[in-house]
Amino acid sequence: MSCFEHKSEPAGAMAPRAPGVIPVEFRNGARVKSADVPPQGVYKPNDNILTPNMRSPEYVQMSTAAALTLGIMDGRMHRTSCTRCLNLLLTYPEGCRANCAYCGLARHREAERDYADRNFIRVDWPAVPLAQAIDIVAKDGAASAFHRMCISMITHPDSDEDTLTVLKAWTDRIDPATIPVSILSNPTTMTRADVAQLKDLGADIFTVALDAATPEIFERTRGKGVRSPHSWAKYWEILSDASDIFGPQKFGAHIIVGMGETEHDLLSLVQRLVDRGGHSHLFCFFPEKGSLMDHLPATPRDQWRRVQLARYLIDYRGGRLERMKFDGAGRVVDFGIAQSELDAIIGEGIAFRTSGCPGKFRDDVSACDRPYGDSPPSNIASYPFQPNGQDLRKIRRQLRPVGKP
Ligand code: SF4
Image (cartoon, rainbow, N blue to C red; front, side, top):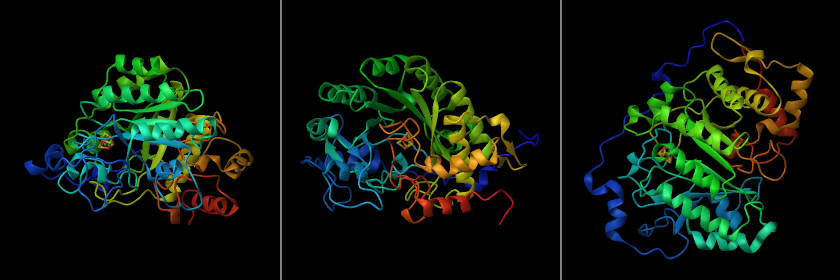
């Protein structure tokens, strides 16, 4: 590591807008609860009908990619026909009570859009009866396209209990050895006992969406800076519980690249997680429509590719932060391995695929491929499939050494 002091960007460069005040008649899902339209099966967001009164555990939302793979929605995706991860997002008319600045589900959107109609990681999330989703996967058995299921908690008073109910309903019908389950947790409402209970009920991997790479960025984007309830210390407390309870390789953290941290900041966190026995799952910052950061630029591709590659080396190829070199702006200038070896790893392309919990192909290939969750198809950040020769030529151009045009 070079001996420069690496400075994160000042807050101004990636500062979120301040959340507005929500009129009382729109708070806490009041519009949906007073209309009280009974749900009738699958609900497609923004379908020009009043949003039904849907609530977990009876209802869950899932990504458009998962709904297409499950066969409950028609449509096609660019260059891929399915996702390998069925992500089930808890749903309530009150929605998520947090206010994370980069997130389309955040509370500050209450007046503008009902919870079940909000975009999240760039796509719509149809709502589906949980029993219907489980039925389809149970019938497909080992032939299911899904390699993993993930329950995504949100910040809501019922979220802990409903996560247990969804997990139990799943494992009653589907052997977790066939389709293992991950938990994308919400530490703010959780205790160590909750983490242990999820493990006892058959969860395989536990993840914490730290999202921010530093405590300052955390506070600015999902703490007091945006009137949101989360704290960096509580997130690390639950992460530490997960490392004890779930054990090595069975816990991890989500991190968003490009919210004002340096590459060195972010990779220090990646190394810290690996040193504790966990993994990191990276997301490229994208200005989510309707979020408090939708006016800010997506992460430059050169920065993203360097971090993506360095994280892959640390997580899967024995790379170490202290063998890498950084410039005065904290950018990677040397990955700490021989150029021939680096070239071979770049050529394999796996480093540039979506990162997340593993599926059935190999440990370093994520089941959670989140098609176009962090970029448009025209300029892919996380590849939801194996990059081909043309993709790799583009990636190599994006990876150009620091300082070269
Ligand atoms: S807690 Fe999660 S779902 Fe809720 S606003 Fe924050 S990032 Fe979005």
